[in-house]
Amino acid sequence: MQINEVSLQAFRNYVNQTAVFDPRCNVIFGENAQGKTNLMEALVYLSCGRSPRARTDREMIGFDAPSARMTGKISARDRDFRVQVDLFRDRRRKMSVNQVPVKNSAGLSEVYNTVFFCPDDLYLIRDGAAARRKLMDTALCQLRPRYAAALSEYHRTYEHKTRILRDAEERPDLLHALPEFNERMVRFGAVLIHYRHQFALRLGEYAAASHLECSGGRERLAIRYETVSSVQDPGADVESITRQLRAHMEAHRGAELASRLCLSGPHKDDLSVTINEREAKQYASQGQTRTAALSMKLAEREIYKNVTGEYPVLLLDDVLSELDPRRQEFVLNRIAGGQVFITCCEDDRLPQLLGGKVFHVEHGIIGG
Image (cartoon, rainbow, N blue to C red; front, side, top):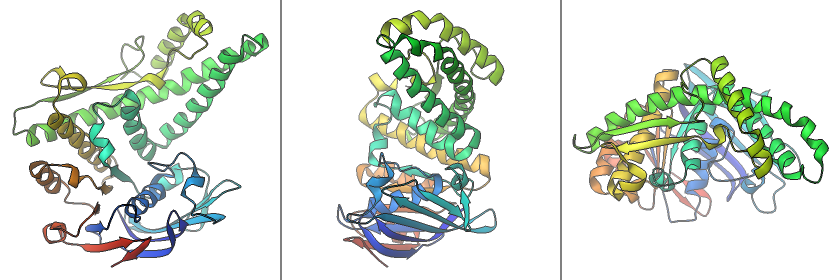
């Protein structure tokens, strides 16, 4: 799968720009704060309806503009697609594929997929659990429409339940609705656990192979999925997980009422990462954590290939400049086979190494 062309209107600092891309490698260089990451953000958004950096759609609309438009021409599964997203300040966004409206992000993910890698991801191992949950959620929302729907409903239900627990002391009548929200969290949570477990198994398999290679065979990486303690087998069917989650939530009912917090559920899930059987978050060196993070992101790419039969579009946003030469070579040797976008500050040796096209971005203008 590949993105052949993108057009941006009033998106971030792009007033009206169109770029035609190479099917193999596209190097995008320029000084900082000129629009390189904004371009990558648009490519990600067109693939999944989510920004890797903005919390609201309004943040992506250019100053003084009432709306923004992103249009992408995509080739995937031997078909051509035209994906368009319109963002508005005062109403909901509009999305379409080949001029047919789509209701949610899953409609975009069915066209093409992206794996986005930025410098912040190099701290994936040492960050809190939320960063590792985000890795799972971002990938699974693109790969599994059922997961995306369940995650959206789980978050919505979690917010409702949190408000009930918070306000119940002043409004005890709210507690009448608590059993309904508990059951919704249990049912949607079981779906999340089911898919996260499967994803973690594949992630661990591919990442371990990459890490072993990058470390010269000296280090063994292992990834283990951690979820609610009462779920003894996250690989069980969804019905079994649902029953175990329900029992866990009932057992914690009193504690949740006392603390006025949602204490149990997959919103606290994590991935445990070890290197040579030692907890990486606590004991790994900076070089080891970077190698582990690299391996996890490259493993994510392999999972997409395994599921869809095609490599996703790989977006490396200023990552190579953060790596030593050995790890740079490791990444460059592993990215063949699919379309790649690489941002950097200077037009360096990458075009000679990888082929493809070079673009210079300055003040929101994309030059070939």
